Each structure stands twice: as C-alpha cells, then as structure tokens.
Amino acid sequence: MTISGIVFLSGIFQSATTVRQLNNCGGPTDKSECASFSFSPVSKTHYKMKKVVVFLFFVGLIFALQAQKVTLQGKISDALSGEMLAGANVYVAGTFTGTFSKPDGSFAVETREKFPLKLVVSFLGYKADTIEIAAVPSKPIEVKLKPSAVVSDEIVIRSIRLNGQDAATFTNFGAEKLQSINTGADIPVLLDLLPSVTSSSDAGTGIGYTAFRLRGTDQNRINVTLNGVPYNDPESHGVYWVDVPDLASSSENIQVQRGVGSSTNGAASFGGSINIQTHSFKPDPFVNLNFRGGSYNTLGSNVLFGTGLLNGKWIIDGRASLLHSDGYVDRASTDIQSMMGNVAYYGDKTLIR
Image (cartoon, rainbow, N blue to C red; front, top):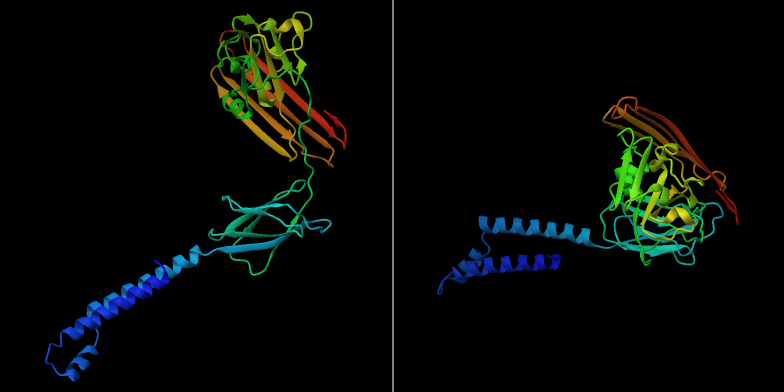
C-alpha cells in the first residue's frame, strides 16, 4: 500500500465518523447542540482506528524506503599506472544486475538489494576485486585493479581425443567425478565402473599389480596415453600400473574410447584407447592433504602442492603419495611410495612443459 493510499483511507475513516455523529442529531434538534455534539471527544473505536492508520502509515513508509533504487557510482583504474579502464565488468554479487565501465572508467549500477552488499569488479588481465559496501556510499567508489598474468593451457593440434560429434563410443571422467570415486586404487579399478570394462587385482585391494579388459580385450591391445605420450611398453605393449601408483590423484580428465577410436599409435589400439590428462597448472599457490583407509589394513595419504606463477614465468607443482595394504591373501602386502612433479615455463611466445 502506498503512502497516498494510507492518507486517503485515513480521510475516509474521519469523514465516516463525522457523518455518523451528525446523523444522531435528529430532525428538529437545535443546531448548536448538533455542532457541540459533532465536536465532542472521540470514541474509543475512533481512537483505535487512528492507531491502526498510523501503524499502516509507518509500515508503508518502511516498504517504500526499502523498494527504492540505489545507484552505485564510481571509477575503475589501473593500480600501478592510474590509467582508467574502459569495459571492466561490474555487478552486484548474487544478482544479475551489472554494467560495464565507460571510456573514462566511470560506472553506475542501479540496485534494489539490501545493504550490506558486495560489488564485484573484473577485467581481463587484472585480478578481480570484491568490494563490501555496508551502506549507501556518500561519494563515488574508487576501484583500483592490480595487473595479473593470465595463464591458460597450451593449444595443441592432435587427433587423440574425441568430442561429441565424432562417430565413436567414448566416456569422459572429469575432475569432479574422479575426485568422488578416487579411493587410492589404480586406474583399472576406478574404470571398472564403466560399461564394457572389467578389472583384476593380484592383491585383491586394487593397489599394485592390476589390469583391465575393455570389451573382452586385454590391456596389451589397448592404447594408453599419458598427456598424449604412449604409455604402453614398446615391446609387449603391456601396461604396468604398479609403476604409476595413485595416478588418479594427479589426473584431471580420463577419456575411455571403446572400439576403434582416434589413436595414432598403431598396434596397441585394437580394442580401444585410454587417454589420461594430468592436472593443468594453476596460477595461484595451493596445498591439498588427503587421507584414506579401507579393508585389509589399507591406508593411503598424499599431498598435492603448487607454487603458482613465479615471476610471471615459472610454475612448479607436484604430488607425493604413501600407500600400504596387507592384501587379500598372505604374502600379498603392498608398500608404495610415489612422487610426481611438473615444471612449466611461460614466455611471451614460448611454452615449455
């Protein structure tokens, strides 16, 4: 209800009370008596009605103030050079309300959100900034973005992986899926969840000497690549997963191709292909610790770390793992330690990985 509507209702209530009082005067009653009666003290009902009207007035005023638009204005500039940034993205966190900065770096965002709120400012080549605003600003907001190098994966033209338009049967395991099913077991045991895949383990725990079959074809006839590099033994085409324990913790994506696929590596691709891609480099430093446990006294732990971008050129990350299991039968225990490291150099026109 608007303020004008509340005032209008208040006037109706007052008029109705006055008419009722005048009608009580009767026909031949003295006019002076009618006048004195019409201005007699208000009744209790009238007094309560006024309290209701006043209450509704203040409620409507509160809603009117909350519903009004607020315009957030400011300027965006480079923190180092002071140059104004045009085309920066500005939006209110948690909403679809936003805009872009003008050629002079200025911006204006209209919002109905309640305070406090967060204003997010981002621009290509700069580190995004989140500004917390407790109340309506009394002056324009000054935003200074710090330059930040953008590091992305290299673009390599190759015919190893498939996409949804290719005429082949394949399944992709993304990082989230791998993280949810990763129990510290070897890759064949994790892939056992897929159609047409069966796995085996000498120790019965999925760690150590493991193998798999794809559509009934053993792994000697399956092409396995690690970051595009063939992992099959060059003589027997066998795959020794015991040499790469806890590889799933360092993997970001695994694609399983069933049947003849996109392999370019010849004889080891009769039954299908498995393409494993390790983690891409992250521009920010990180450390992750993981602990696992299971039957047959199976214990596992690993640490993943990364330095982030060093001097805008170098990135170093790695993983260290410990795995132990007593095994399903006697004399089938497993004690494995493994490490994996990556170093990358990002130049202006050069990428060494």
